[in-house]
Length: 257
Image 1 (cartoon, helix red, strand yellow):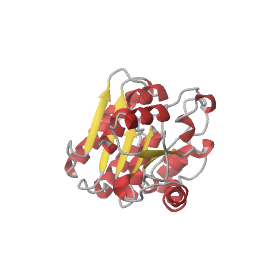
Image 2 (cartoon, rainbow, N blue to C red; image 1 turned 120 degrees about the vertical axis):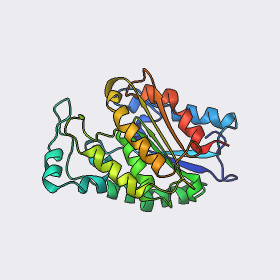
Image 3 (cartoon, one colour; image 1 turned 90 degrees about the horizontal axis):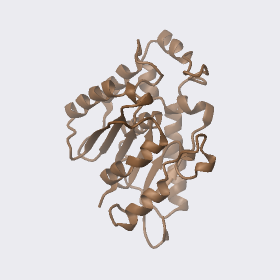
Image 4 (cartoon, rainbow, N blue to C red; image 1 turned 180 degrees about the horizontal axis):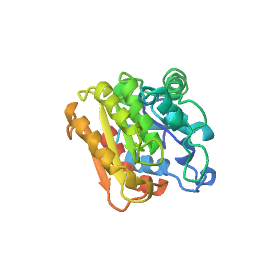
């Protein structure tokens, strides 16, 4: 942020798909979240705590296997996993480049990246100062991160969470296994905040049925409006432009003064 210096200690927001956050010239679709402008504006208005954003680039071909929650996926029968790993995307390309490896991705975040950020930047390290966010499959891995590392992350923002994991709702066992995992592993609502949202156009048309199920689980686990938000954005599609237009809402929820 503007005025960054060692005189302050900063909260840290880790965000997936880092190449889609700041610079449109390097984004594959020339759309970005404009996180520098969004955060800068909220900071200047004094609405959020001092914070830096760490954009973690996705690995391209391995994005799906880095972001699909591994423990839920591997709880499926081996033959079901094998079938899912052969699924194609709508454009005909392979959805998975290999076996799901999101446990290692999160291990990298927590044991390599986070200590590096602490060494190199003037940051606070506690759970209440450390947040994670992403969209689509980045929303899935953000939820998985706060469940797997509840002592590390105090809040997660999951925009347009890609509950199906693949690209169809038909005969798809992935959402059900994620919900079962949530029932067993959601962190305590006493010291965690979780944000979900979804639109109603393009790929987001798949999400409402699943989000409603997830919301039931959130309530069962003791989450209320104090520590959890789910928002529906009528007319929003599945794009960086849509996420840019509403990202201030989860940021204020997680880090508002």
